Image 1 (cartoon, helix red, strand yellow):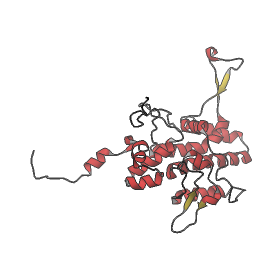
Image 2 (tube, one colour):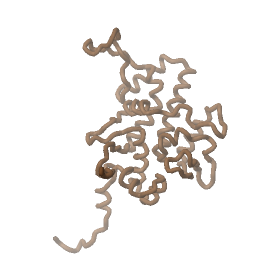
Image 3 (tube, rainbow, N blue to C red):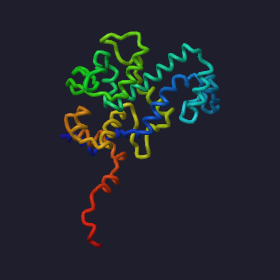
Image 4 (tube, rainbow, N blue to C red):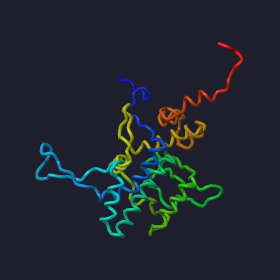
Length: 260
């Protein structure tokens, strides 16, 4: 009889959380990359790596050449196309911002409609997630931060379709787009410990920063919509970002009068 694998000791795909700085870099790079794609330079392919008659290819966008490619793209494009690509970048950045500030999964975000948003609700804005959208099969009502609400409203100003069943995102990013956005932000796919950054790592980022902010694990569990608290603390909290040193030094002096 084959024993069931222990997930805690046999994790083949360990995700890491993004730091605050990395999230900022990702959002910035994402807004610029659609235009920067049009400003990429050409590089020669070494003869040993050529396939067929192709002798050159477009350079990849990195954190080092992002701004240069962006400026080139602006000089090549006409104003209507610039506006269109700017909105594409801003929509993609909003997708990532909502992922790291709500913990929604990629599929859940893709399916979110305007009718599920209650941006002017009192005392606080929120959105509803239907049972058929959620991995757990349960309905949820989740809060929205004020800055995220403002970004959503800005996004909707440029939308022609405003129906109840209209999807919030026209062009939600897929895996390849996310990887390219990370590259342009200087975020490596894998780190020295073999942990990976993929689009689902944005949910890990949400859970980790709840812990960093000192949110009680039971509250974090509710925010993550987990059935077991172990999922929140063991699988969606990156210990590398936890301030263990600060926590230890925050303990009170127990007996400073005793000399050792």
